[in-house]
Length: 396
Image (cartoon, rainbow, N blue to C red; front, side, top):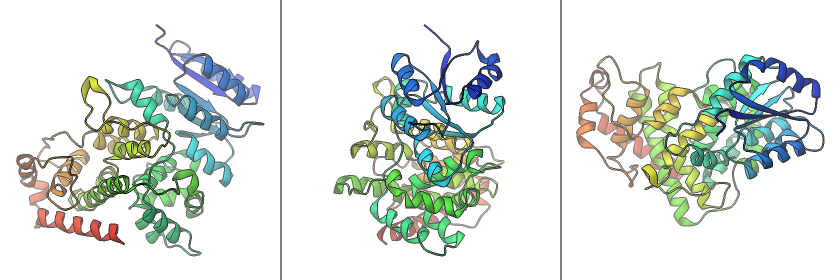
């Protein structure tokens, strides 16, 4: 069995491919590399042999990078998709934002290309790696309740938009926040530092790009309405996530707060993937009860998708560990521990996730931690208030 990762590079300029061959010569012992000069040739190669990663230029004749990667997503969802391009026109950028997993500028130094490819050849699920990668890799968008689409369109479609208003409405939408964090953590879209919040993502991308993404909403979410059962499930996931993020932000240290709030909002990302499958999107539903050898869990799929999208590691790690008990040192609660504690507090409110328990003993231990007892806050009352605020926002 070939243990090497298989990488496919696609560019219509042979000199670019020759440059990649030379600069990546040192990876020949670890990678099997193939090179294609067109989207059509790339699809032929993908049909013949399995690949782990495809790296494509954006601007190519006949079939551009966005079209190629859309085909790869449909036909070979297990293949991670990287855009390597020097063109950032807004229309093209929006299309590639949906089709790709990671984004690099061209020219890019060999070290940057190697680092991203090596990240994407790693799969986060030890027990169901290939299956989880295939499910997560197929996802190009996530379900959003029509009322949330309406809010995003109303606020970001206005002639004049205040940053605070844009950040407020974006931070209440799970899928759109994740998409902005994916894009804003890429040099291709202008990032110069790690981006961890909706506000910093909007700053990094610029309001025009964010508004253009909302304007191209048909690429990001369906205009179809789901049945009552799916809408109820979406609302449960949304209310629990938003309430937890509000509460976790109060509990976290200032340095960890952006990571904590993002991780809390994205804690059930995999559940959204399953709901997308339930409405006939590009991925099959995942059995929420599946564990061990029986099949992948929602959490495994969500973590893999966040990893594919390149979100900061503290966020991905906290989402992965949401259901694991933590014994935090007295020196401070880390990102994962705060998310876990806030989740357990919200489980005692109307915004609870009915699929999960309360773990009262574990919660009681969290409530004695010095980081929480240092504040005069009644954390259970704070959880009720966060739940009420999420409920009010859901009803609007």
